[in-house]
Length: 115
Length: 112
Image 1: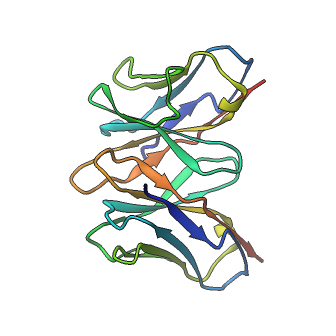
Image 2 (image 1 turned 90 degrees about the vertical axis):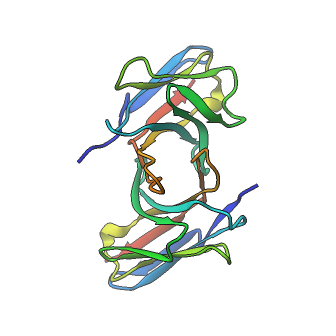
């Protein structure tokens, strides 16, 4: 069964360092998303991406964040200069968005720890 | 601004019980509603998607209902099993950005 794949599963980085989180969405899907979940809190939307550009971003997604689809399969989230408060589980998701079918499929997540 | 609330926050039941998880949302103008399961430290597994024109969806022992006018959805789990122990999240899509707005989840423990 097709699935969304995220790497790495866990990343530890020092404050101020750049990190890139990688995702391979399901191959026939057209919409891609990043969400995050700080420990003990709700899953929060960060950004959606369609047709090689950002569709919407939340207020969390400031200038420190960027997304890219560098080739036909990967979808990346870059945090330029990490802060302690960026520590969270980051989830990539994708959906086919055919008609009213908006079902989103999530990856297993990358746990980012900023020290 | 859309807010999604789930009650109860936690639930512990003996194996075999039927149970209902509740989800409410403040803006009834939703596109769709999706239920997920999350195991500790893991990703989100999609359980059911209910389109705004539907009133319920079923998958195996799971049945989800949607009442848009009252801003509520329920997830019914029949004959619960210890393997059902997880956190159950509901999320709504309210606009053309297709972003999901999540509730805080119900943590379910099914005791053998």
